Length: 89
Image (cartoon, rainbow, N blue to C red):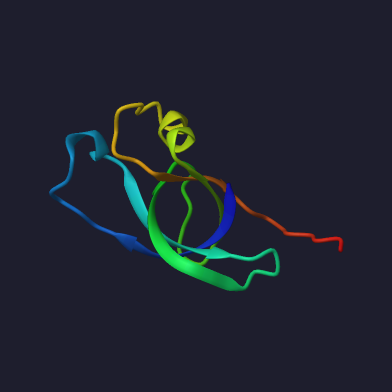
C-alpha cells in the first residue's frame, strides 16, 4: 500500500463489463512528506474519494479482493481516505 493524492478522474463509457459501475480516479503517489513522486495511475475507488484528497492505495490481487471482483482487470484500488499524516523521524 502507499499514499497518493487524487488528481483527477476518468470517464469511460465503453469498458470491460467487470468494471461497470466502478469509479475510476487518477492518483499520484506521494512521499510521507506529501511530495509527489513517480508516475500517475488509475485506481478504482472503493471509499468515495474525491479530487485533492490524500488516499491509501492497494495494489495487485489485494485491490481486486477489496471489491469482491476477483477476476476483474483491477491493479490498484483506493481503500482509505487519509485524515492526517504524522511522521516521527
